[in-house]
Length: 228
Image (cartoon, rainbow, N blue to C red):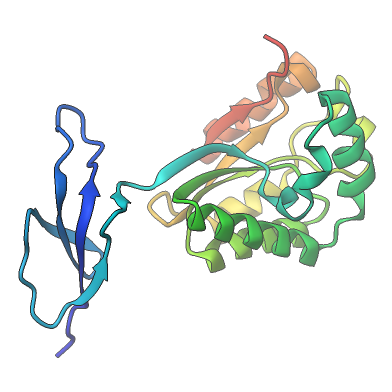
């Protein structure tokens, strides 16, 4: 007989985040397995693992809707530069040198620091698809880190001029492999989206083809719109 794990969070200031639901105030939360089963001012749960949240806020995890996670290990390189300098530093200088293992380590670092700061869901806008191995290792890190993520499959940073300067190239067909072999489920912890260049970085015809492919694959699209 399998015993479900029980965790009791005590004495925290509870913010539910539910529309129309007032802040709960100070209270306890009982978790059984991966489900919250009770929220109350005081809960008795013999045998449960107790987490003392006194003086802390207990709230749903935050959601980061646009994160270039592969850059996490070198994010300090872009603290005081403009967009053109960012393109030069990350796209032309750093990105082409990245190995699949560099991508894995960057993504894993980004995932773990996100979780440590209370962010439990990320949209990983990944434009480091230099090879299928780069893409696989990026996904490996998201899965190994245990975060909920939407993996946005972007473009390679090799032969960059052909991909982002009014490009007429269609999105890499490797996204089909990812959809079929790696991220076929829409209910998994890590799911797939298309990180498309959009009309800002590619021609309108290329944009139309990219959107059509995303619809064919049944995945969402996030486009790059740099000037509004």
